[in-house]
Image 1: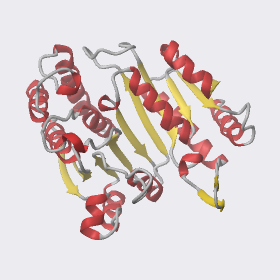
Image 2: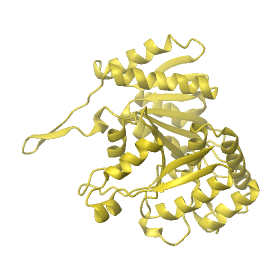
Image 3: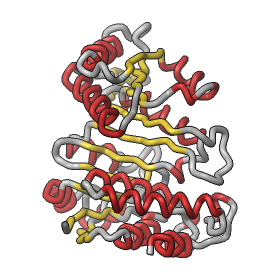
Length: 333
């Protein structure tokens, strides 16, 4: 089956890692036609807007997108393209698998857990205004609809992928109404899935437990802001953001992306590690039903890491981005 996929190369190191990931995915045996579109500063320069309608239309038409990192200015300039895409396409579920890779020094080499993050509400939605000069109000919105659908997504994902336990992180001891609603929705949905163990932890305790005994977690369900913070914390436990995938999924489509930055300081040098975007591409193949190709690609990636002969500079090697991609392709053929 031929798939048409929207490709957003991104900026900084984005175009070079995207080009190599495209080569690897095509070598997996899946027939793909790519529609390339731009977002962020590149789109602003070319089209006068950071999220051109042609890009949104492409994702809505194809239902799937692969996205490289896009720079978000800090404290000024345009708002986050990532947040804009999630809002425009209602990509309500953020999926962040956290699995240690072989031969990569890290604190927890056996770690294998998944963060499921609600993607549309909470403080992260950025609903802010100035009340009077010197006073800013930020609104935390939690709804039953959004909380229920993300809980159901977490349980459906766990059933499909053979996960056994979901832990809901919250601060319902203090934010009794907002986080209380999120927790209540989780508990109600949990009754529909008796085969999945369901528990909950106050978010600060959950963070401490993640650092001390992360193996107790299987799937973690978190509201938007907590999920943003905890998913990066977990990435740090296994070597950093350059190694973990990310997906944003909704009823209108799905976007798979590297969650690390655009690293403009090394852009164009051909030394960036494409692993995070490649792992996101593997998630994308599974989403498309191409599980055999996904497994083939994943096994090749894991074999290259296990052998430890071809490594990019960030993990102690000297290989160029293209050399790393060549090694994975060579293992598949």
